[in-house]
Amino acid sequence: MNVENTKAQMRKGILEFCILSILAEEEAYPSDIIAKLKDAKLIVVEGTLYPLLTRLKNTGLLAYRWEESTSGPPRKYYKLTELGIKFSQELASTWEELQSAVNQVKSKKNK
Image 1: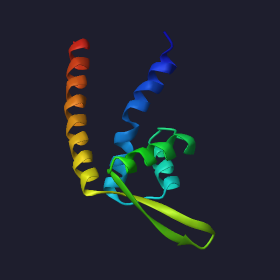
Image 2: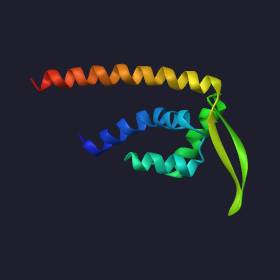
Image 3: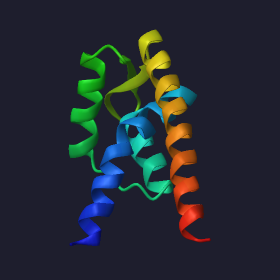
Image 4: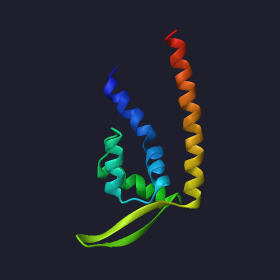
C-alpha cells in the first residue's frame, strides 16, 4: 500500500472544509486562498482550486464580486453566502467531533 496515496486522499478529503474555513474569515482572491493553503502545508494548484470554487458557487455556498486591478484584468473575490456560513459552521462542528474521536482512538493505541 502506498502511504503517499493515502496521505493525498486524506488531504483531498478536507480541502473543501479548509477553503470554506478560509472564506469564513474574509473574502479572498483565489491566489490568496492558495497561499494560505500552502502556508498550512496543503499544496493546491489553480487547476484543483478553480473547479472546486465553481462547484461551491454553483451549490450556493459561495458568491463572488469583481474588483478592478491596477496590474491586470479584474479580479474575482469569493465570499461565503448565508447558506455557506451555515454549511461551514456545520462542517466545523463535525470536524471537532471527528478530531476528538480520532484523538481518542489514537490515545488508546498509545496506552
